[in-house]
Image 1: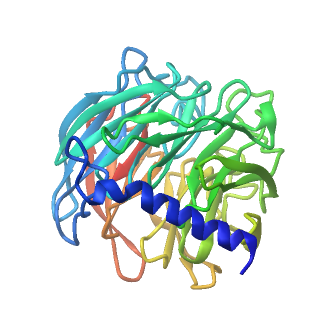
Image 2: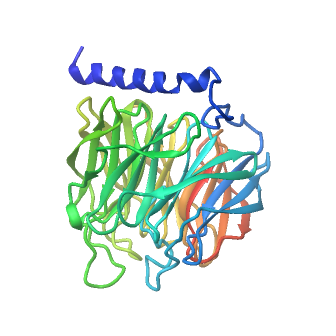
Length: 406
């Protein structure tokens, strides 16, 4: 058995022992980090951020069994947001990333960034209510994305000299606690312009996409670094790295890990133009944390392919093509090979700019934030990967950011 495999097994054991008190019910208060997820056909919820300079909040939508949404409430994060920018793409994506609001795997905790005040907040999820647990410094400037695995949380700070910073979840209170020695730089340094941070499904690797430096024209991305960073997770929760991996196409942006250590990554290309990548690529993460390309830059012919999401069974992937107002569908083979199914599997409507996708736990419903129309669009995911529109729900202010669902 290799040293890295031993380390991964030790990592899983460490997390298991860390969570043991929660499983035995010895917490001083009800511990929301554990619990069952909603089963298929059961109601759930969808969450997004207001990202307002006057005060950031998490908006909650109730999800009915048929996938439709109803506005349920709004809960302050204790921090402030950036608001919307005045040029594309910042007017539709102020933070330039994916994962600004995320749920724990059990759906009992929710984490949200407040980019303008450089903070991250932890909430307990109780039905359609959120209870704020704590709000603390993100360990850098302009946090844009959050990753969670077990009792570990990492925040991607995109401002200044970007970094990732780690936290642990206190087993007694579920509050976030800074993890000493966890801050790590990005491979691209101050020019990284990062988009997302996320853990692999087994928690052994942390990954960050770098969009690259901005062009002289405001709002247009050059994506010169062609870089995806990976970090290996140590037994104490800190990470080693970064390992600099060459991206198949320029401007790697949103991504999601799926089965067998596979990662599906979007490549944004020049905004408002079908020229360039505007594609998905797939990679396999090896035992040392490096990426191995499987399918490179499978173009969908759309514009500004910034966000990506994969169904829970790993069979289908979707890209949000903000510049062309469409959603593309891909099939993912068990080995990670991609096939373009439909470049325009869905179009939310005239003037739409789909961003920030989220899937319900059972994989039956796809939700997409539409920043110019200030709505959340709902689709039913069919057995063949096609999408059936279920309508739109208003209630997201201009400058909103992120999306999570259960």
